Length: 123
Image 1 (cartoon, rainbow, N blue to C red):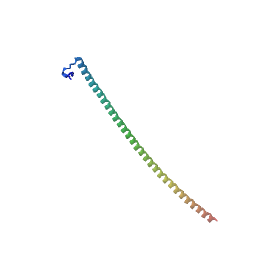
Image 2 (cartoon, rainbow, N blue to C red; image 1 turned 45 degrees about the horizontal axis):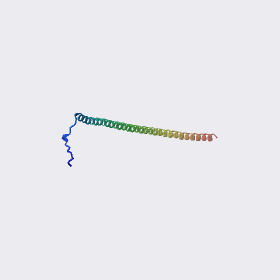
Image 3 (cartoon, one colour; image 1 turned 60 degrees about the vertical axis):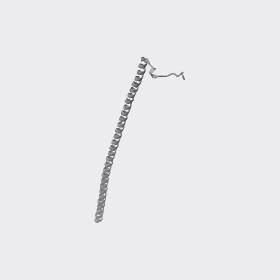
Image 4 (spheres, helix red, strand yellow; image 1 turned 120 degrees about the horizontal axis):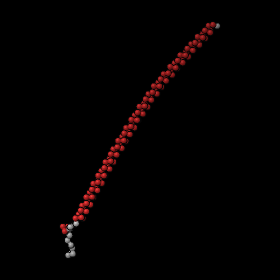
């Protein structure tokens, strides 16, 4: 145990170049980390912005689709109303024609009876 050497940190001395080299390496490492972190923050912010833009575009597309759907429904309702009105008008016209035909049939029957009476009266 007598061979054991004592290591006292206070006895160490380093040349100035090594101290400067180690200091510059640490400073370079810190600067690199800071620069990398700043770049990462910028990329993350850009990604967040892109996600917000995509969300806004999707919401806009959804709103457009909703408006188109409502517009199409309104057009369909308008067409249904128009068809119903035309159908009612056609029914009324058919009924009027039918009543005219019935009236004409009655008039023809009356004329036929009148002609029959006149022809019987002449004989």
